[in-house]
Image 1 (spheres, rainbow, N blue to C red):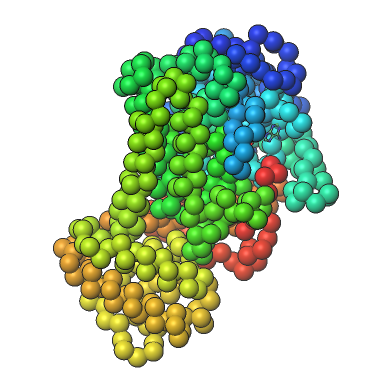
Image 2 (image 1 turned 180 degrees about the horizontal axis):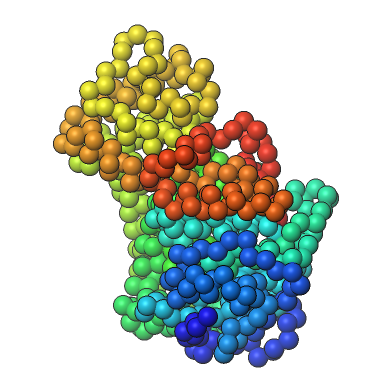
Length: 525
Ligand code: AMP
Ligand code: MG
């Protein structure tokens, strides 16, 4: 492999002077040197040729012994020095102090086709930031991260990518339900790829320590490499914050569009590039319940539930603004950006849902139409993905009958988990909504076929439903990686009809309703 190394992070930012891999507080530095732990029987489970290509790795190289060794942490890339990044974070609303890459190690930064990428192993052993944990990751969480980050990319959602999924060959002890029943699981390593892994928490930790010198160095680095249109002065810092807020907003709108719930939107999991990062106890909305979160650790307060992701992102942006304040020393422009976020969100959210239901022109009744849709979707368990995807088959000249019959709902009927509940008040609401929707469609100019084409580009047919990952994980645990590959291939074209794949366009099966890993996930990974 001939990767073009371009280690700007290492060269331009201050390093922790201590070289030992011991756990500690690290000050006046952005990273600490840390090498991956070697493993005896590593094995590549899957690799993404798409991601290999953007790095300049050929298919043959990706199948080589060298690739296996490098991306399981058993061999260093020539002329590189691996490191773990220092960051802090607000976790579940509280400042948690230094966190850092406790189980992530950046192997190198590479340039290819004028793009810059950082290669990062997750689960390759302890670092100075591992605190009381082991620095490792298990197969189930690694399969989930690997498949989901690539699926999100193909859905058009800003995200970090994944190059490879490997087994370390070692066993890792985990207590999945945190109920005193630890067991051994297969250890795994994902190689993640992103233009940068900087997070809100990278800036927060320096600000919290009043290390304004390093803060300025890091912000200037960020602007130079990631926000090159921002100047290195106060106006540029404000512009930077504005751009981060716009990117974050864009990411959250995409999450709401495809039904993705991140699950742990702590500020250490918020990318400075507005990328979806750190796939932990995330989940996909199945029935349209805005209060849903897959994360059992958050079951009580549901801080990170689907419907609150935008306000949490705003709260996180406020924490970033506070962290940047020492460089700007003016609250007003930052407050203005935060206020704009709220206004922009309302407009973008409306536009996004309008696109999902095939509306292009503006009409004063649109907001109410969408509010009513969200209400009726919540009346009885209704599958978000199936509903929106099939709505594009509704014809302009559909007539809602006066009588108490459900046939007008034929196109979307598959979306109901409990079809027997679609009667009485629920049916009345659906009739009402469809009448308004059909009336509203009359104001549009597109034909049924053209509207369908456009709707099918924003309403995915295939998403990584929670149970699908679990099916792939259960097989992988037994050494069968075929479902990982099947899902990986399927999710490369989430908006396309794919022959032979209809089995993945179905509601969550009943067995998955309460199964751990499907409807609920802990942070144990
Ligand atoms: P998360 O919320 O999963 O993104 O992780 C929060 C913090 O805990 C980060 O600093 C992680 O690096 C760290 N962490 C999570 N799991 C482990 C682990 N198994 N070993 C070391 N650090 C970990
Ligand atoms: Mg994290």
